[in-house]
Amino acid sequence: MATRPDPGRPLAQAIRAAHRYCTARYPAPPTFAAGVSGARARLLRESAGKWLNGSTLRYWFFDKPARWAAPEAQKNVVREAFRRWKAVGIGLDFVEVGRRAEADLRIAFEAGDGSWSYVGTDVRTARDDPRTMNFGWSLTEDAANGIDTALHEIGHTLGFPHEHQNPFAGIVWNEPAVYRSLAKPPNGWSRATTFANIIEKIAPDTVQGSAWDPDSIMHYPFEAGLIDRPARYRAGLAPAGGLSARDRAWVRRFYPPRANRPPAALKLLETAPLALAPGEQAEFRFTPAATRDYEFRTFGSADTVIALYERRRGGAVELAADDDSGDARNAYLKVRLAARRTYLLRVRLNYRRRAGETAVMVW
Ligand SMILES: [Zn+2]
Image (cartoon, rainbow, N blue to C red; front, side, top):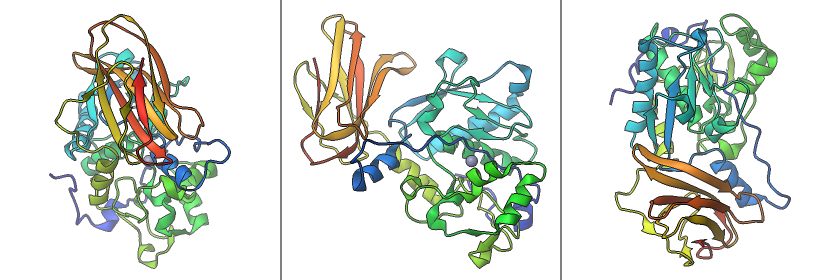
């Protein structure tokens, strides 16, 4: 696959002094109940904001107002970027929808507003501004930069932060030079924006692995004079372009390819044990005999995310979800279901105190 188009791109060409940078919109760090620490907190932070595997993310392009709409050629770059992430072989699906009400991801092209996305499931937070992703410059003017910008913003939507803020990178910035450079056009950033998107280190548990990947699609290029150390990047740093080997490995770790077997049946009033390691997910199907309210709950000392879907033509649609991560309680749903329809329950185990003591039940 030609997702690393120009490994030999000359540094000067890849890092134009006037590079336009993404302004990711990070959620507040997750907070946990008192006493949640150590391995539990680490595992919870790692899974925070990640989608349940198997999810279908429906995306939609604004057609109005005019400042948010874009010609097909621009949208095609974004469609191609979704296709490339999917082609890595992940368990998420991406479907373009024609109606805003059906969309999880609402994509605009407001020129001059920067390119950005919310991170992971935080795109679901209701806000006055209905956009979850924006492209603030042309994606077709410079083809390599255009597809990389779209891959990068989708990377945020999948739950990945900026790689140059990886605390393991050990980047020592020439901070005055960074603030000066980003304050100039075309970025025109405030000190706070520059700090949040470049200087600030991300919590070690939330970055992709423990090693730095300067070729990650989530890494910015940097012009000469912004990085003090490692010394080899004083002349500038240009990621290779496209998805790196580690981007591919890491997205498959969170969203592994899905097994090609039907989910196990969940039976009324029978506990189904969850033989899962942290980060793993189980899937059950449930076909109620009567139309009424049903309750689903996890049991045991575990942190889980559960979600219930109805199978419909065009893919499963989520009806309800709950996340008990960092709480003393258990994940719980109460939903009215219709007789003889097929429902799907997904459970992701984020943490468990002891193996083999977690289960889920419907009644
Ligand atoms: Zn970004």
